[in-house]
Image (cartoon, rainbow, N blue to C red; front, side):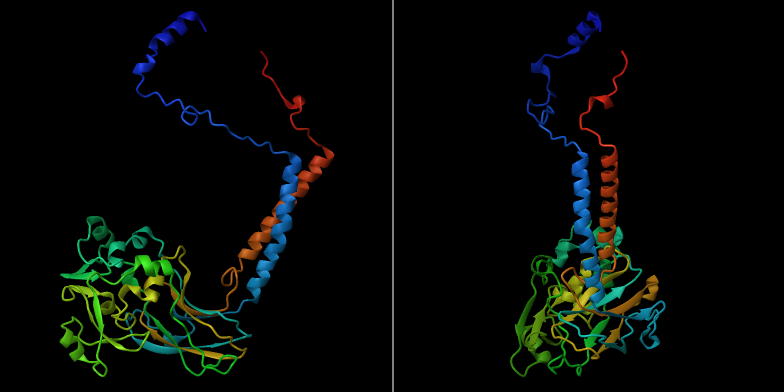
Length: 386
């Protein structure tokens, strides 16, 4: 490089005091951070592949064995291709139709025995659907909705002049079929089986994300006064008290702006109690959107051991239309294990990857045995001719 060019470049430099965009003289900004550049030693790669194979192959076969030992009984009761015509409602929204489903335990079922419902071809993961909600409203806010939340909830934000609470597509497409385990089925001790519907939602959701509306009130009615007079005496918005699922007693309730707002218990009167609103656990489970178009959501569980041959009879109240999105509805009874429910893909994924690692390890070992290569051997270096 000639000296004239160097002089020109130096003249173009600003004095350091005038260089306002100069990065600070620290290791990160001056790219002087120490780095580790590992060298892939052939022997270490061979050992790594073989160790991974030794771990993943038996783990994969064990996971597959655990999955095969799980019991899963599934009945598609409505929608496209349903095998139960007595349970089909077609396009009849909120049909309030009843049918029964009978499950027979093929082997002894160990608790917890999980009850799921399954939908197919329902894309909860679509962006316009997944973001159609107002989290502040679900947490208790009843007024002052911001523009972003109002736009996200559109078009289900208002019905005329009536405010929908909660707003949005997710809340207002809530799965509202109802399942009840009929009495008469016995556990291993001869006691009636009970399906528990509490404890199915995340505790963090119930504690932080879903709350009663700000200004909501409820009060226990006097004994023997579970009628309209209890609400009238307290000047509450309720027409009639609601009975609590936990203690069985009657409570009067008062919702803020009840005359201009449609709350969740009014949208789904057969599923949601006025004493629960968005804290209903089935609703909370529904609001945690699924990532795939075929998904299951927990409806309840049984805590007792069920002997082989026991019949579980579920009374189903049908309201949710599946044919509108070309899907199906199913009820599933299954056992559980340390890695979750039945998953036939998990085990093969592990041992296929294990066999791949074994193949790579053996191939590299064979090559290294017959034609070893010394690390940093200068004979493999080729210099550009000057």
